[in-house]
Length: 240
Length: 74
Image (cartoon, rainbow over all chains, first blue to last red; front, side):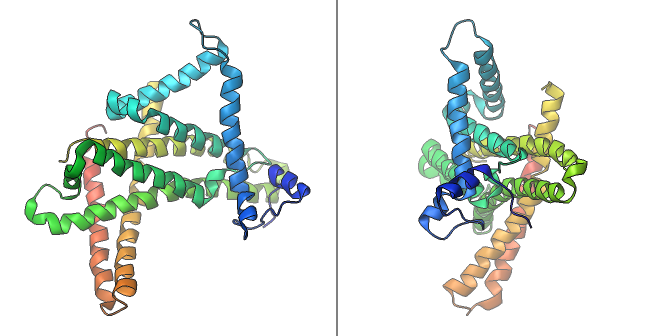
């Protein structure tokens, strides 16, 4: 397949850096300048600079920029509060809002020509998922101490040898399903767009997939955050 | 977004996870069994631990489905 033109990679190659043509490069420098990392940094810079520019100083009567961000942050906090309670929402809001903004922006950035979605590489989604998985168990130990192991025991004492491996497997399956869902959806969107653009770009063939891509990006960012909320609230509540 | 639209998006997200979670549980079960058979016990217990953990994996997948039916917010 034709290699897509990614403008950051083109610029870095013109400077003389060894940009890899496969998914991951050989040396450390090639790994650092591989496309999914450079586009992650672009998304990070976007998410730091744009709110700084539009927000300005916080005021009592909000202007246009402040109104926009208040709407988004307020909606996100309400969504979290109705799913995991006020206390948990206040505790976990910074992390989950970061995930929501980062995943949504990096899903949507791939719809523009010359950009790619960092989330279409499994290393990025696996990293996010491992953070969520570790935080789940840290929260469980923080809220319950040693009694957290009761979450893995099931309700009936003589079924413990059966329930313990089942619970361990279903916790490990969360890593697999959460990372592969996001990676698979976004990678499919990117590949389909590339192929359709190559085959019949002049006849607007990618247009329906662009429309579906907006939808998929929104739904997948929402699903990632929603499932993280469910896992966190499952670790925080008492064992059944 | 209006309330009913939001509700539909949330349900769509919830139900699109069912199939993949079932498949992932089975794969993780088989993977643990295979690792125990071939890396920990060096093939002495060859097919048995894989089969037992396949059973555990399938049970875990169906337990997840059962827990989904018990959720109160759906």
